[in-house]
Image (cartoon, rainbow, N blue to C red; front, side, top):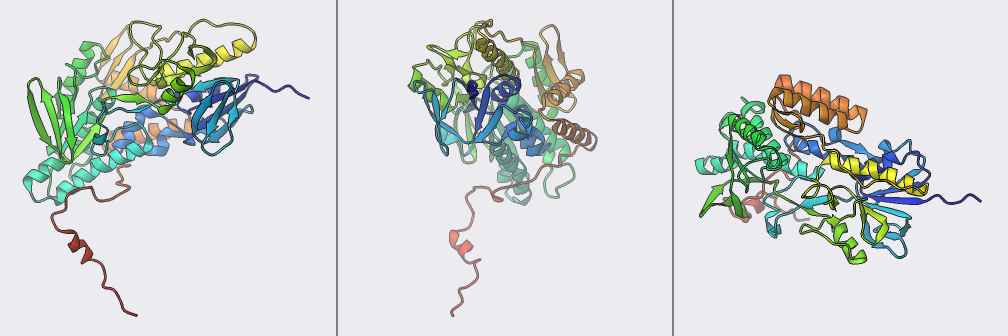
Length: 447
């Protein structure tokens, strides 16, 4: 009778979890990858789905397809709801508990409204395909509603877009919406001029792209301004409600009338962080991320590892590693080596992130890139941004489709994926009573 191979259970199919599974392809282990989605999402390009440049399938890869050649790997479409570190098993919603010898948690983060979750219906974030489709719906529906609106003030509100958060996601969204207004929709409306849209980017600190070098932040703000984006730094959002955003700047609080607010200001850890803390006593940071050891394990449990955005790795520099894809990829590859080394009775050095730089795109022909030894902005930085994102897309067909789509968009200035899906009409106060809607129904027929 053959001896059972060590069981590695990976929870989460994002960059961290998927790269761990991929790196364990030929390892003498049994891998189980569990995710509540059947696909891996390339989140760095999610904003392009939200702004109609790409379709969801262009940046998504089915997990079973990616891992099809891995004979030692099985994929479960399910959600882990609890962990028993004593029995060494995880509980799922729709499956019996699964036992593990090594557990890898990589469930990432979600939106963080800083205690104001009631803002969420008015200001969607951008973490999932559903978020992107809802954002896309709101952006393009705003132009459609402005076309129908006869009241100048209400039309102005429909053509005002507010993005909260001046990090990479906020900067990319603001630049993309500006390009939509000035180029993609040019000449498509009769009653409005889309270029009259006002795009406002709000950032609480004193500059956009706070983690970047100040010179690149300045370049990014210059590029946004050229695109027609109004950048407001040192601006704190104090309230978001239907049709209005309240913003405090110093001692003054102003209100912005708008029908489209997009959230890009913060994240909080997935609920797996709290579950881990309750079951193991591991410490969490203020947003719920798990404090990990130098080898990415958690204190007191050498068989449980936390990687990706859910992990707070504070053993390199004076602050935690950023929640970006390169960190997650490197952690996944490191952990796979660590698992194999441990099986062979060996050891491995603590994880060390190799920072190859940061990049953010502002618009067509404009980006900022910090390669540590070289800082760039403009066209060359934009080409580097394109190369990096194409390179890291998981599947070849995704790389090819995105390259072709970007090339077509570049020359036509169009955004062919700008479909308005889901609920076709916005949530708004109608100017006529509900009985008017009832009157549209056909009369009852007596039989």
